[in-house]
Amino acid sequence: MDYYGEASAPNEAFVHSALIYGSDDAFMDVALPYVEEAIDAHEPVLVAVQSQNLENLRAALGGEPEGTTLLANDEWYETSVSTREKFASWAKERIGSGRARLMGEPPWAVGNDALVRDWARSESVINVAFEDLPLSLVCAYDTREPPREIVEHAHSTHPQIMEPVGLSPSESFEDPRAFCRRLDSLVERPGGRPATVLDFNLADLQEVRRVVTSMAAAAGLTGSRADELALAVNEIASNAVLHGKLPATLRIWQRDGELICQVRDAGDGIKDVLAGQLTPRLEGIGGRGLWLTRMLSDAVEISNRTGCTVSIHTAAPEFALVG
Image 1: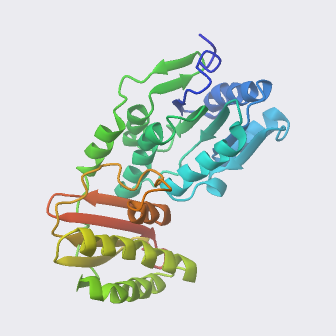
Image 2: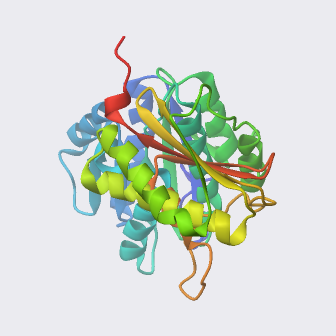
């Protein structure tokens, strides 16, 4: 077997692995050879990792060799879906007739269950979204920081684990749809009383946008960010009245550091656990609203327990609690 299984893989095969490390040296033992192999094979490589890991890689490589793109993860990562789209676009622009390599390190929002689940779903969905790309993607997990749950997600969402001795199958890997369905079953209603409750129908969508924009401004969101949140909620509210079943209700919670906008209708719910996760087909006319909402939001969660409930999470600095 090749050191990382790259040369032996078919040129069109997608290889998705997790690098689980507990020290700077353990990261470099795997990451540096991975990047050096890409350089030797003339494969374009993008690395977006923690700042310390980035500095260590640059020092070992003597800078940023031709064909490599080295970034801190806070420069690259946005929402889970928009970041996945960026990875795919970067690779497609450079692959040509060969392969490309990626290495990323997601910014886990430890302590926020919804955001952790959102990123975990994205890690799983990558197996579907990138399955036809001649691409290798390594996702790094620092065991010194995240709770055990996040490391368990790494094993559940990556078919292979990358170690200095090579790639090995993950015994805990789950089918992406089964994994997303399991996480969806954990979604709960936010605690406490919502700051805003608004029943609405098709004629009330303008009021829905006004209320969301007002709450966003009070939360300290910039003009464009407030507009994006209003657009995201409007897409879900429109789906609720056009494709769901009345009554439909908007509830907004102010939580520590975030706004949660929740839209509920009495319909049968969204049955596809990957709804809005994959890039809509150009020739299609449906499915874009939920995809756009995921692109614009820090986390989107769906529950079909009683009707259909879609929760949209957005960072809100003015609501951060001071200890």
